[in-house]
Image: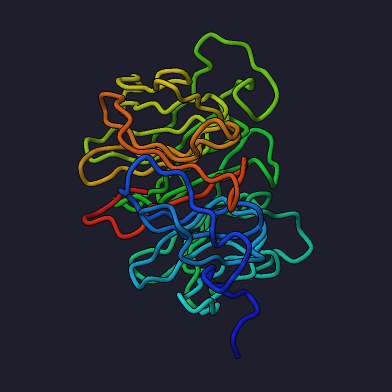
Length: 317
């Protein structure tokens, strides 16, 4: 039976079908989540399809089979095919001993072996589950003040089998060995500024959202309300950074999603920055802006999850 969570064509007369995103060039297809839905855009910024009733979304993983792995609320992970059918799901809130406990899921990843990595905020563990939902591997993670909403934003299993984890509230990125031991950690700096509340450009902090391990061994970190992306060596030296006002005509706010394209360019997710700023920005390592994406009709000011679609070559995300 077809799921009620459907992809709905926006060429069937819905009101938003005539609205196209503002793109600086016909460069990337985009999939992004906001306003309780996931929307895919073609290179011109027109909507291909939309998926409603997914609630808040912090992660969208484009799978090799064309499906997407995302979330349906903070407690459930779903894999959805191009017809809008849920072909796999995992109810984290009610599985493997979690029923009745406070829990949120923000970080997850489909692995090469078919298992799915899931980080259970509030429970304090990273698990890998099989297609049948059985735990194949489990380790604990460590935070100073456990909280189901802010323990972890994004996490990635690395090629070496370890886990790179962004502890949002702690402002810290940690690499955990497969046995749970911390083998590398980094305190995201405040750059000699005082903390300031809020979510927009006026805020300030180090609530890191995302990180990627680069091919050169360095770690690329989206600093969240630090309004920046920094590249850090294993010795914890910052060797490259783009800060809030480094890009001409653009203000960075809560920096969220990260992608490193095959040509080395970086795509930055710019959340809570207001309608005068793009939600996605592609830059070179020389901080040249080569592409931007903005849509405050189908999306909005809380676009925290996004990915490009159909890029040739391997994209780190």
